[in-house]
Image (cartoon, rainbow, N blue to C red; front, side):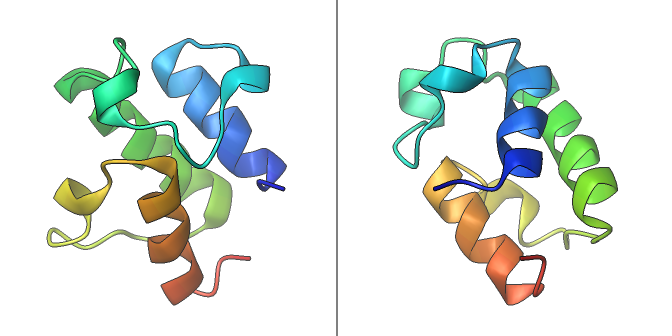
Length: 77
């Protein structure tokens, strides 16, 4: 099960239904995941989890699964 804060952040950034967000949600299968929405997601995540993503991590956020791995490294869960 995905953290509600994560789902809510993704839903707001990409303007998609939270019910459709899974670990498999990615840039490849989410048409609204463009460069602007990507930045919105970073801001949403940083606010929701009180973390700061590094300049190396930001471009690595290409899927929900990868984002979850990054957040686990920050001990956000």
